[in-house]
Image (cartoon, rainbow, N blue to C red):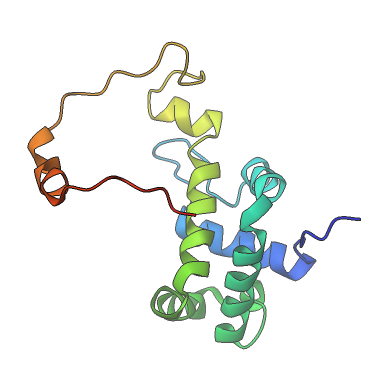
Length: 149
């Protein structure tokens, strides 16, 4: 039996609600919102190590709302979202990252951005040369780069 957390029905409803607030659908660009069924399924399927933080963020949202966020009137959700941005910490950042990550790998979204629907490798993507002098302060510190444990 897995010791990994899964989302309750209430948490899934709140995830869909906050995802739609983060990235709403756009008729102008012909893209779904982050509450789209396919994108939501991708989020749920790939939570993995982020599940604990996402659950904490969703529970925090519900506490701020005083009820499941999905049950709150749409006009009142914005105030809760503002409080969440201020007090959500790492859990909120994780939730937003997960939503963005899954949204921007959706084929419909990539197509709307004019990107080729393919893996970045083996062809890779060409990036314009940047200003390498921005790394000078890091180089000046000296020492070796250490990996986080």
